[in-house]
Image (tube, rainbow, N blue to C red; front, side):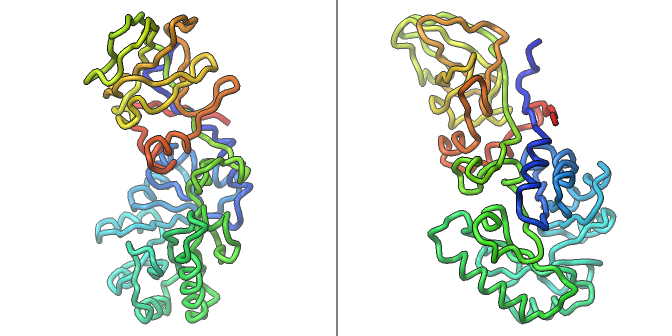
Length: 348
């Protein structure tokens, strides 16, 4: 039986094994619905793999995890309104603070020093020290902007600034943390009391290359199916705008997945699909609901055959990193972009 449109299959065993291989202590980042993999399912698998904490971006994400039975410390890393702070409290979650009012309102908070990321946190070291002296301060943190760029000097400067801050605070009853996935794999000096890994938990390479180089297993595969196979004559076109036309007699398959499912329009004439273990080019414009794939002048491909867009089939493999390079983006965005119309299926 063919799947309904498209299925993202998530191997929770791979997530568990990735977490077991990452530096410890480990905080697994499961924001944005677990980078498109499913936050609650990932959180449970990460904890089975040794993660002691989980982190999210918003308070509502924390509350949903609690409702799904996730126990242990949860850190809300993003900015929160007063109403969201109440939600965080309801979720028994810790929050991040960089202003006096946040410190005054939050029951448990982590002081964020902006050492160069330039988004959230305070650059005022004196303010950060005052907040860190608050009795409800339970953590100190920063975030690296260029940990995934080994040739950049900012990483070292940020690490030095945060290390000096931690030393100046001088409390041994607060945890200090800074490392994202790239920093955790790049420099043990960035580990402090725990690492905050996101993309590596899901088996994707924070450096945008091959996850296998870091013994990481991609957890998500994306597949659809062949909905139609049709004969094209020379000059026949596929898709909006006639952005591809057949140069010779050929067969073309229609696959029911498109940008409405998160398969970006920028992949028009710009990616491959695996069918019967062969790499075949996506041709024509990616539409909301369908893509077309050139099969060649002769084909054994039939309606109902599996079409893999991310993952392995036979001896061939398409990584999220490959798709990201085609889009001039990062692997995070490939999985985060998958919409709720793509059914998630979980394996161990």
